[in-house]
Length: 408
Image (tube, rainbow, N blue to C red; front, top):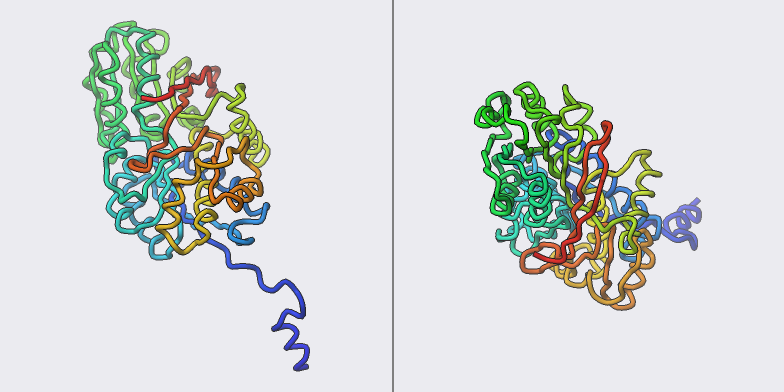
């Protein structure tokens, strides 16, 4: 009996226990105004995680797992989740999703000295805040989206534009970036997203509704946007008389399903960050990602999914380049080496990425969202950038073009 026990303890020539998994933190809005986005960002991250683990994981076969916290689409929720993840000493935190959440945790990021990668926070304000060098984002600043949005508005040439926007980092940031790029007369309907009653938000724009040719732009999220779009329809705004504009915060099929008057957004024109055109040679990676996502989840990937997918890969690369899951400053410093060395033609093959890192200590990562190169001073992604122009056609979200912007 003793001999049998000894063999069990020693492994009797077997491979021994599996290496300890590495838990990566994940802040997602699984409830609240953009819960639909939280689902897609989580699924895209899990798709990347599965590919990485199936190819052997990181640091000599250590599996990666996600430690997920629901932010509730609130800065308070993001702060609570971020603190919990810091206390668990995770090596990387993916998220938060919303710009207001990222602004709200800036001091925690700086003090926590843990690499934090947002997949979708777009406020231009984030480029100017001091995160201690530990905050990075895959999606471009709304200073980029505003260029294409302004082009779309200018082409329609409305005499007056009602901008309905959240009074937060996202709504104010995109509005401020857009305002100097259009010459039409602007009336702002700014609202506190924490208010339960949004019935009077559109009062300031009521005088514009009777006049055909005017336009209305919603810089909102899905839940609050649906309330305000239904309110606009009841106040006389109509897609047959006015042009409706949307942005990335409402590029989600759930918007259509919860609107009382879904016909209100038929023909609406929207913009949103994305990767290179799937029909171009540079967009093969995005096309392949979307195919794998559709196969895995039986639905199309929504806005920012490609950034979430890439963020998971970048987190794994940071750990692999640093050769540790414990030295957080080293993992942060590895962000300088995800766009150097051997350029990869495609994602979805972690073994190729890992071999390149082990050979050179660095890799030039080309992801589903495009070339991943960070400005180490601001944490921003460097161009070229890609912005999709999309519309609502027969009750479906349809991309009509992808605009490339080399730099601002």
